[in-house]
Image (tube, rainbow, N blue to C red; front, side):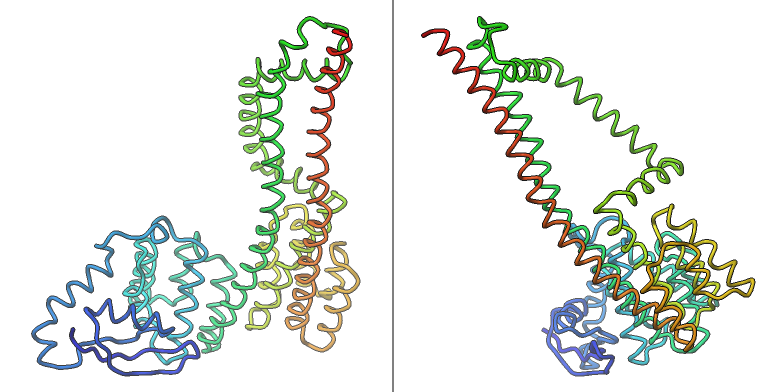
Length: 421
């Protein structure tokens, strides 16, 4: 195997260099990445070997970089949020290592194994080469880079601290991802319990209850009332189950379409906030998104009005987003931020006091991030408490339903035995 000389950046941004043996340039870059390094330059060590092997080696590297080999499942599909986070993290390390932006984008193109991500990075590189700023290049792809991302990059360009701004952006994205993943993970077990409950009832009503139909056929009205009700439910399920399933599917599709409309979204998001256990949890989660985005933008030099507008757009609940839209106009007219936030009625006294302290000391961004950390902990604690109540409650409800079915069947069996005796 040929020898390669390499130059790479570590996770801390330090430049390292050395030599290694590999089958190709792509293989050498893979070995470096496995060591936690981000390759900046990889070339054949010996000049004579470079002239002899460059054609074959570079062709293999280009084919591998362009996706000539069959991509893995995770390398297929469109660009997702995780791809953007990985690209931002790697770009941060390269810029901290002193690499120019265009060269860093070239390295990202060579390192990418996902065709869609490679094409996106190539488009960014072409825009930068044509004279556009990086923020303008990102603005051409609104599906992947939102206003928050673009304004953070724009603040980095204005301050000349692009690497530091990207580092903070990565921290922000990772915190939001961790928060969303904790919420999704917390919902997995209740979803499994609900699925098991539905499947159990379908099996009991569709297969178990009909087995007793012949046994109870001659009793008629002599059957106990619970058993008669169970038999009727079983008959409806076996005869019209397909129609019930069809109605549920069509109703679900129609309901989903309506819920995605502005009126439907406003209705059900408002009802969620009124739920006794889930409502306060959803509200704190949305306020966490707002506070963290707002604090991060202010900490990177984004103007107050712009930061408020962008942070408001990160709130997914339309009912909560509408009052927040009034904050920026109040501040624009000369009002205090803390008063404008208090008028929305969305913030608890602790949040208002933190922002008031921040406004008086000139550290609104820092206090907003502190508020986000507090709300984040409250959300995690609330999720654990909710699961502590919901999980045993769902198990209890499933046990009661199954017990009622079994008791009704046993009452019918005992009635048959009494009749025979």
